[in-house]
Image (tube, rainbow, N blue to C red; front, side):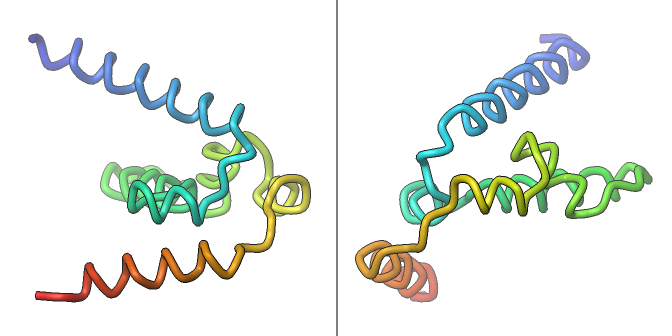
Length: 101
């Protein structure tokens, strides 16, 4: 496959992933972290790092707005729920597994 086609396809898939996450606000970040080991904030950090590697000035808050489709604080107020004790326990267990050699 030609490299430019590859980049175009990756960008389209990334846009679809963002649209999917923006549409499914019921999916909480802690659930993503437990199941997939990444969340919306991780995507924003990766976006910021990719911009920096290319000399593009995008800060973390700008990247979060791109990922969330709105300012993070607005998304948080509208959609983020308090993590349940079960979610926190699952997250802690996953982190302990990752820390093991």
